[in-house]
Image (cartoon, rainbow, N blue to C red; front, side):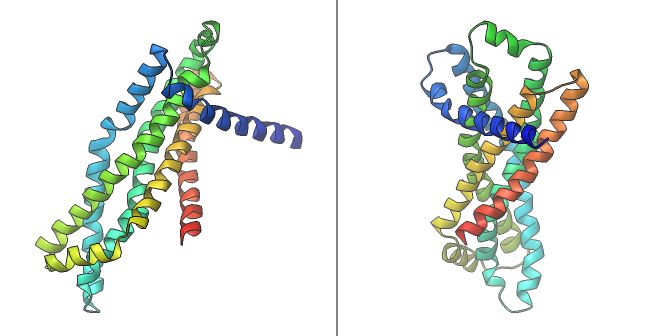
Length: 251
């Protein structure tokens, strides 16, 4: 059992580095199938996720302001609410929420799609046509996720702060000048950078887990459903774990 576990760990590590190494083949590939797959994944992960990420982030910013302003008012520090919320969103909530949303929306989709291809032997057909499944299926999704998640996070940060501004200034009476002043004082380029670094890691986690669960599905349609659920759950767990590690490193 120990030997099997070591072999499986070695296979997973090889899978990770193989897919990462072959991302350069995606960027410079002349194969129309690979280029089209990459473009489709950019659109699916990025553009199609914009409304969901934007709406969730906007309302989370509003909820944060509703929760924090009364607490800050107890100490006469409601003017600091804008800066506090800005730091929380840029360093933590924006990246983590975006990662979890994409894990649920895209991770499940990738695992189900590749799992269906595996069950119907389309993955085997790629081998017959001398197309590497890692280069065609995994690397485009990995590269697209690592590119699009930081961009989605920028949108998430912006809309979260706008939501907080609308509620704080126009509903709860926070002085507009104080809101923007403390936001500029507290939020630094380092906070934004840390958030974007997190999302690159989150994107890699989502793509790796979803593709792995899809490629190695067993048990037909029942196995697809089981592995799809496992992909989402494992992705979220790894996102939260890696979030803690990265946050601890940059504190």
